[in-house]
Image 1 (cartoon, rainbow, N blue to C red):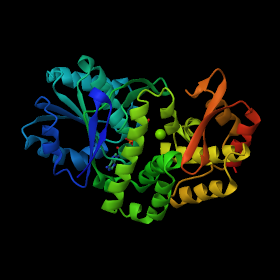
Image 2 (cartoon, rainbow, N blue to C red):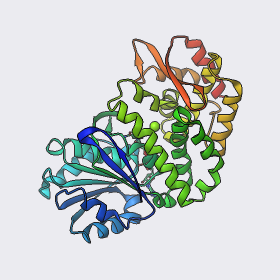
Image 3 (cartoon, helix red, strand yellow):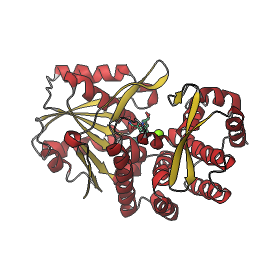
Image 4 (cartoon, helix red, strand yellow):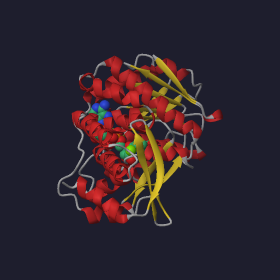
Length: 359
Ligand code: NAD
Ligand code: MG
């Protein structure tokens, strides 16, 4: 088992990376929590992994109950959180007890928010089962739900006590979801680690064949990169914003397409857009732009969206949380493995990029 610590003083926690649930109970015991656990999962994940996790935990003396959510972003709302509160009250959970999020980013975000707010905060453990959640959402402590059609507007920063990653859980994930997760994976390389990008590119086939060693290495690198950014800037005052690379255009595309594309697919289009924007500004060279495009395509990710409505995407970019004083803040590449943040006021330039992406 690989162990990586995220160092946030009294909120520090370990990320355990492994290939089964064998040591889950033992690892949990070391947290010294109360005996009661509620596993929150969704219908898709429940049928594969709830029983094995419950058994592991019960064998180590825990009292385990389960709460199964309807799957999908459309259920990431306050109603889902109410359901969890009801069960916690009914089972008389106190602050020593623990909520376990078993699932992808949707389950993790909902459960984390419930944990942050029930009795002003109870123990929370993440067991991410999608590549996106293993690489990204389970680390860093952002929790929350959507509200009135606005994504992630209700939420809290709340760190887990443990992240337990069994990399083999992604074997049951639809392949399209694996590719979408890879967009956030390669994003980590593009912002901070050039060599990691080349590693992902060279091992693409092994990733799609679920090579355990490669998957564990990816998990370790992602957690180390994201963890290091969060350690420096837990609440996104400055540096953490680089994790939004590809997301300014990506979020707008996601909304305009009515969430018919997966988040990672939109991030991939957004990354291609950020490279083009940087090229027009003279900050990155053409070879890097082409190189990144090839890497994304190899991961079976889109780099454009024919027919994209440029005006609609442009106006949505302005609704993005990253807009301050009507200036658009972009994270742009200087080269593969290094980014910088800058305000862009030239609306025609942004439209030119969006037009490129629409071809
Ligand atoms: P998801 O949780 O919706 O999972 C994708 C689909 O795969 C779902 O249908 C789910 O039921 C299914 N699934 C999950 N694990 C499975 C498995 N092992 N086998 C079979 N099916 C499985 O989506 P996601 O991509 O994991 O996460 C997206 C969410 O994460 C978004 O809501 C996004 O806002 C959030 N997010 C949060 C952060 C953060 O820092 N908190 C970061 C990035 C994304
Ligand atoms: Mg993202």
